[in-house]
Image (cartoon, rainbow, N blue to C red; front, side, top):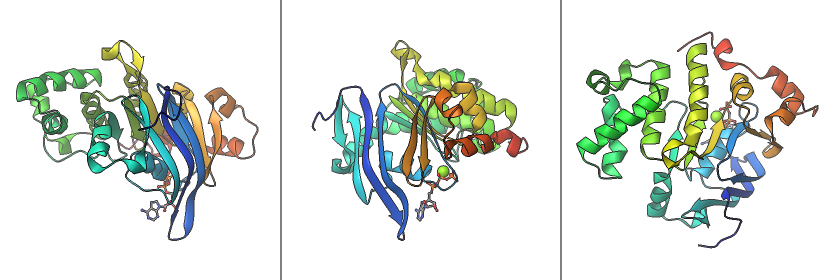
Length: 271
Ligand SMILES: Nc1ncnc2c1ncn2[C@@H]1O[C@H](COP(=O)(O)OP(=O)(O)OP(=O)(O)O)[C@@H](O)[C@H]1O
Ligand SMILES: [Mg+2]
């Protein structure tokens, strides 16, 4: 391990390139994410947002370029980590995929799995944590609810379970891929507020967690005003404050922002 950067760097991406079947997607992405950032990654459909996220998570390998991540206070090259070290890293990261990636089974099964398998906690400790995280995402904590199959839940509830499951592992970093896509207006705005509240780690005394949200949702940006990272033609074309993004006259940003959908309006309230 080498200390390559100031201690406040969480993720550093340098000259990241990735093509699929000779079709370039990422073409020299440079990005530094500071510890405690609250970032939205935006950009047109197919511009490579999910591909970038999957590289950070170590699920895709770059064609060239480097990704360094913070591990135990030092920046380490993701490419140099073995499977066990990658698992260790993931214990400190919470990921909420677009389709939530819940396992079939009950609410409690979903929250318990990693606590049992990774943390080796007993049932009693698991249930205490489950009640705490369900409460923090605004869901019931009664036995009936814990025992209900996740297939019976609405889209908004399933999203909350996926967020609760991540929080149960006490993550330092949270990653969300399109957290409000397909939700009705009430659920969308509740999930938006949840993104802001989970950003602050109350148990750690109000320390902000590093939070990265891939999104198409203009309403989310207006409401939460995150730092904006825009991908365009395979590169980071904007990295800065929301206010500067919103008022930018750039010919790349202006039409994108003006036409950016408010997702729950486009989806007609589908849950
Ligand atoms: N495993 C893969 N194999 C081949 N092509 C892929 C693969 N994954 C992504 N791509 C291509 O890479 C490009 C970027 O995809 P990506 O999913 O990152 O887009 P995105 O910005 O997340 O779009 P959206 O906003 O629609 O989710 C697309 O053209 C996609 O078809
Ligand atoms: Mg995507």
